[in-house]
Image (cartoon, rainbow, N blue to C red; front, side):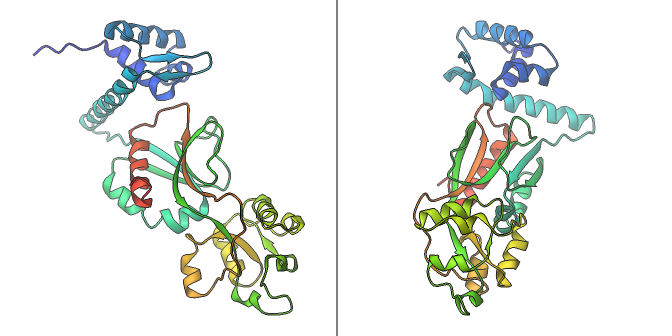
Length: 296
């Protein structure tokens, strides 16, 4: 049976352009010029008889037809590449790099990664831990999990789980010369910081207190060391009850008082808003939404 197919080179150009939503980056991927990508896409649009991209003054986006075509073409090209590599004896494993906060990675994700590997052995997953925001244009990262309010410029954020921060400390700090009973008592204690001092400063302001204590205290960017310091009675840190439930249940940590008011942060799955997720990124997204219950 003779198949009536669009020009295959044009399909490759379209898939790269749709993946990046940028013809310059698509050209770099295929080692051609942006003009060549644009020409191939125009040829494909003429073949279909309708536009596949919306060409704005600053950015590209897919039309309804383009959005229908992209996942089909991407999957077909992926399967061709995988089959070719198997035939040549060189199994091809798509690489997926995910950046997560150290707390989320060590206290939630690590215990669940085995399930993802069983479901997707074909994906070469690389998990990078960082407390800093990802620059998707500079860093070699496909997806990120970050804690905050989800309003990061240039990104698409999907809420995964609530993670309201509360002061947590050793029960030893509830007694002594300056027992922790009210938020104002924090001025007598060391405040521990994971990333920077902004989170404590914002919490104190939300509690109606002077933010001066929040501008001092050690910064410990390893969450396990931070928690151990708090358990040892060396200070108070802002932690998510969701992530610290084991220590709270055992009594190693306590929440001396209720959280302050203000915005409620959460963990978000983050990706760049100028590129469509590939098959590996889509698989991880489906996995993490299912595990957190955010996809229900």
